[in-house]
Image 1 (cartoon, rainbow, N blue to C red):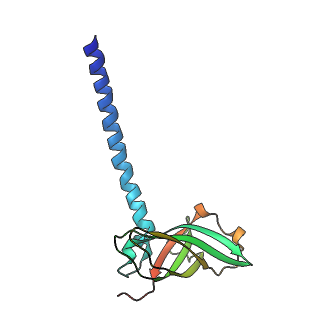
Image 2 (cartoon, rainbow, N blue to C red):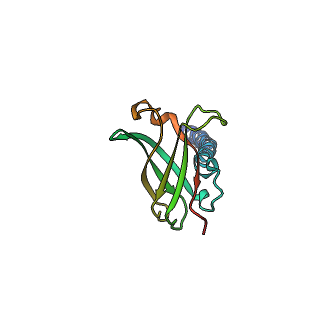
Image 3 (cartoon, rainbow, N blue to C red):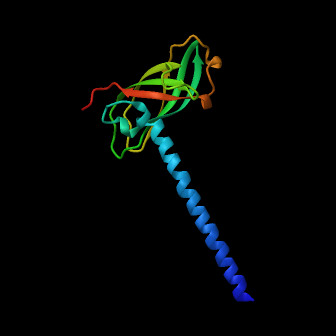
Length: 151
């Protein structure tokens, strides 16, 4: 009887192990692809640093009647990236590829160390008030361009 129970436990364990591994490997591929699309792949920038940068976490705020956007700039490289000038096109999550951006922000990002991220704020030009802008889950970085000359 002990051998039957032990055999059953091994079969169930094997099935769970293979099920978890197959789900983990299939769900990791879309997540990696999604991360690449939000970073430099969606950026369209030809700057050599573009493939190492990601812009994420967009939030609209209002300060003294002026609209601002706050976001993170993430360095995914093992090297330090010097000060960068970025132009970021912000779109909605349901925007079609040919649609104009919701707004554009231009910002100077201070030096980023290896695998470091920094929160940055930039003014944006729009006729909407900050509370009229789409909520964070409905906006994304459509593209970004590094306007600092390549070294």
